[in-house]
Length: 102
Image 1 (cartoon, rainbow, N blue to C red):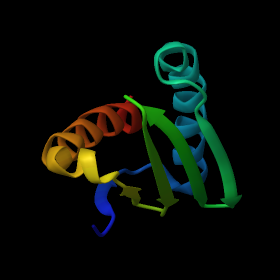
Image 2: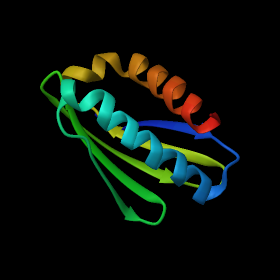
Image 3: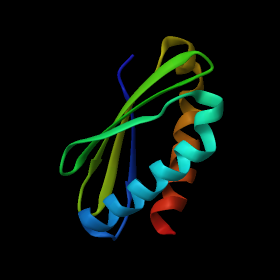
Image 4: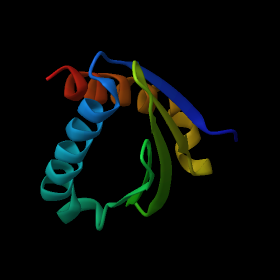
């Protein structure tokens, strides 16, 4: 399956969006790591974040590209999770959309 791509518009610029994302990663680790295990997040480039975690025994890998006016999120879904691609997209749009507007 090709990666699931989600685009989230914002008006924060690259630096402002990075700050929001860094804060969100810190919160996600505190809130979700007890259930899903380690959340690995590394800035590979100034505007490119790699995120890896496992949920329900399935590994998830994603790339977040921070552009001046939008985030481009690409997620490699495990085969078992691909049937939930619509729900996963909806959840990302809601959660990340709320985060970036907060």
